[in-house]
Length: 268
Image (tube, rainbow, N blue to C red; front, side, top):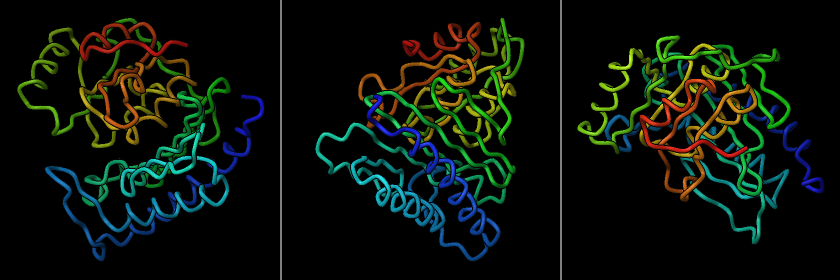
């Protein structure tokens, strides 16, 4: 680990997520002229998604050609034999809110080294928020340290609830009913990464989802870990490539959240 330059990657990621956020914001400010296509039910993409990811991918490739890359729009480019590190990118998480002229979308960049997420960068320019995390070094929101909110019970706050059309409604509705039966209450914004960041900074006490992709969550999971929260072992069972169920939250409520979606905590 000592021979791997995480400092340089942290510095570039911090600059790059802001630059990518500015590019995405420039598209957001002229939504009427964007080319938008559907990738499936409630799954949209625009030229903003593609061009923002290309900017990120090309900057990273120029700086760190030895690293692999996984992006929602351009896919996997890990041709480097024996690559230890991989960048995982969602250029616009929350594309449906983005194209609907809502503010709950973000640019998400994570760096995973030897199977462990080390760095997380999430820019939400429409909310004027920048989240940065480095494992073992804390997390910040607009440069100020953040921490998860202490919560002992489900009734102590709101839970972020994600949903993917890959989960049949018949499987999702019992989860929702169980959460409500336990006295919990939920919010859903259309961006898993931003709801997870809201956990990291104490706005929400936790987050659960029965299926989510790696690019939607890894950067924000790094945020929660660095802010003192607990996250499930998302990368187990090939989660990087196949997606996974997910739970994250304050340490006291995490076991209850994890039981709702059947996941285990990440071992520290």
